Structure formats: structure tokens, C-alpha cells
Length: 394
Ligand SMILES: *Cc1c(COP(=O)(O)O)cnc(C)c1O
Image (cartoon, rainbow, N blue to C red; front, top):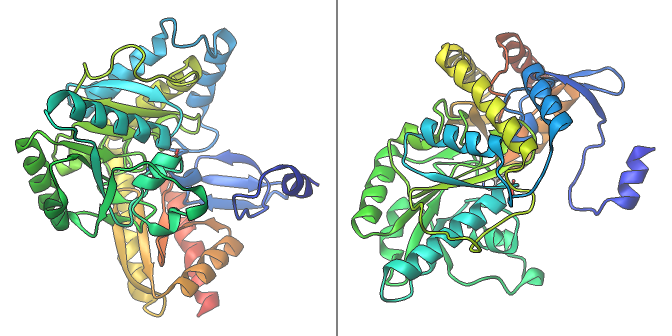
């Protein structure tokens, strides 16, 4: 009944699977028939502290009983708290603006970069270089910032000017011209195929930009908030970007986006804003998620989980050479490179039939983004189900 309702009344933008989930406990989901699924997707990297997390649910409930929203015209205590926590955990001298999604965070980053270019140079610098196979969002501007031609459908044109794409990090140097203000990258391309970049190449690029007063924007919408093993992938790569964006895992499923920058004076009142952004509900949720994951990291549990997950990958890869050509990624952002797109589709469907949720990325990557708090039992069960899916297809 709801399937028909959805098909009639919801615009058709997703190729939905009509499974009807009713409940979740950590990395396990239950559908309306009581069937369980191991969740290696966490809602595309969002449910970072798992489903049904009691601490997060209580924090949200208590906050909702008092205040959900008052607008940014007034002080919002949890917004100030979350901003302070993000800045402290990043280790950078930055300040934060809150929006409601990854795309919005990146829009904020682009605005900061453009204003910085206007203010700090005699000529107008506004161009932003991104990478092929990147993904930066679905708004008209962030989709244009996304370095995949298939996303730039002509029926939505015209798109904003000032974006160009390079094949890899090394190519960027030649593309920088007198109007370039920033380079925007993911440190691990998520949607593009769970592809991490080389640490030295990134450090070199960061230094090159810094020496010329140009900006490095790191899109950590997917890699941020402990998904890489550190609070930010930026910390793992040992760089200091000018601008960092966050979203997906930051509030455990409550919509949120954040853009942080060390150029704290660039915006003045009126330059940017959001009605919902940073409200009591989302930022209170964000504070709780950060508290949960910070203690998870400090207790050593996070590193243990990450290692446990990682150790499974080579075994599976090597046992099924007819399916896989290798494994990629880091932290709890992992992928198996499949032989081809057809193998990938078959495998994702077979995993689903066995009760395991996995994602696709790029053309041929099976992507896994489990909750950061996934248990060892759930990891074991997930890979057991993947193995039986592989066996059945073999
Ligand atoms: C998901 C994602 C976005 C877009 O986030 P939305 O919340 O869907 O707008 C942007 N950048 C990266 C790297 C992402 O993974």
C-alpha cells in the first residue's frame, strides 16, 4: 500500500528498493516481516552511531521537549557547543557555519573562497578546480563542482561558471591560472569509487597552494567525523586546509551540514545564512554524536573495530578472484573493486537476498560504510552473508 502511495505521490528521483524497514539496532535493520539485515551502508555514511542509539535518541528527545528551533536571530547554545567541539577536535584555529546538508556546506565553502578571492587579490580570482570522479552535491552549483560529466545534464543548464576538473592531483598545477582561487578535493573519493589519494601528493599540493595564498577546500562530507579513523581525514593526511566541509555522519541522521574555515573574518552579517541551519535539534544531536564517537575513539574500540573490519578484506578478495580485482579505501570507508559493472550489480542484489546491505560507488566498486559503532559480531555476520552471496553466484 505504501509502495503505491510512494509511487503516486513522491517524485521519481530514486531507483528505490521497496523494502520497508521498521527498526534498527546498531548495524542491524529489521523489515516489516521481521527479517534482519546487516547494514554496511549506515544510510550512506550517515547513521554513524548506529540505529536506535539510546544516547542519541535520549538527547534528541530531551532537546525536542524543550526547543527544536528558534532561528539564527537568537543564541543557540548547542550550536555554539558543537562549533567549539568541531574546532577543538580538528586541531585548527577555525570557526563554523551550519547548514543542513553536504551540498549546502560545499555551497558555503564556495562562497567563502570566492569572497576571499575578491578581498585578497587585485584581480578577480573566482575559479575553483576539482577532480574528475569527485562528488560535491546536487544543487546547481555543487553539481557543477562535481567532476563527472554525466551529472551536468544539459536540461538543467546554464550552470555557474568557474569550475574545471583535473584527472589527478599532479595535473592541477598546470590548470591553476591567474583567476584560480581554490582547489576543492575529497581525500578519499567516496561516490567516485572509494579512492584515497596519496598522502605525499596531497601534502605537496597543500604546500603549493599555501605558498601562493590560494585556498585548499577539503570536502569531508563523507570522510569526516571518524570515518577515516581520525576525527577528520585531514588529520590523517596531516594537512591544514583553509576550508573543511562536514555533513553525513555528523548528527547521526538528523540533517546537518557544516563548513569550517580558518578565514574567520571573511563573512560578515548578511553574507550567508540559513533558516534551519544549526538549530537546537540538529546541533544537540551533533554534540551527542561527537561525544559518543570521541569516547569510542579514546577507549581504543574504534581502532579495534577498524582493524577487525580491515582484516576481513584481503581474505574475501583473494578467495573470489572471479569477482574482485582488489580492495580499496581506509577506516570504515571500504570497497571491493569488481571485475565489471554487471558483476557489481549482481553481487549487490545477491547480498541483499542474503540479508546484507551494501552500496555501489563509481562504475565497479562495491562500497561499505557501516556505522562506526558496528560490533564484531555484526562484522562477522555481514561478511558471512557476503560469502554466501558470492558462493551462490559462483
Ligand atoms: C554525500 C556527499 C555530498 C552531498 O551531501 P548531501 O547531504 O547529499 O547534499 C557532498 N560531498 C561528498 C564528498 C559527499 O559524499
